[in-house]
Length: 85
Ligand SMILES: [Ca+2]
Image (cartoon, rainbow, N blue to C red; front, side):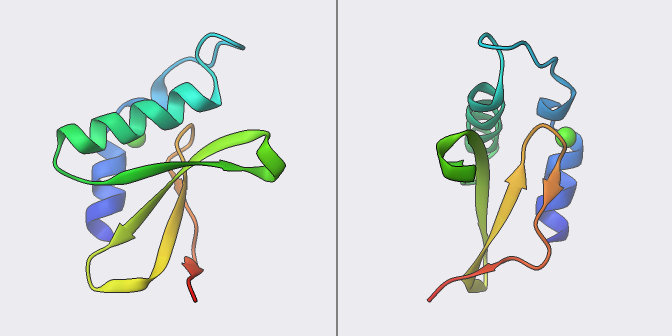
């Protein structure tokens, strides 16, 4: 969890400028996922809010039963995480 929040704070995706239709929610989410992959992490992209908004999710090692949801425009991480199964 600290590793995730620390990585998010050093990543600059949240400081990108929101431009409707040009650099919007899907671009933020994809950029975050690509930056994570470049650093050796896996962060996924998913469609939230009834298909109107792209966000990210992450698994944390040792916590296989939960996923953390991430708002890439704000560096927000869902607490508590979403429980699986
Ligand atoms: Ca950040």
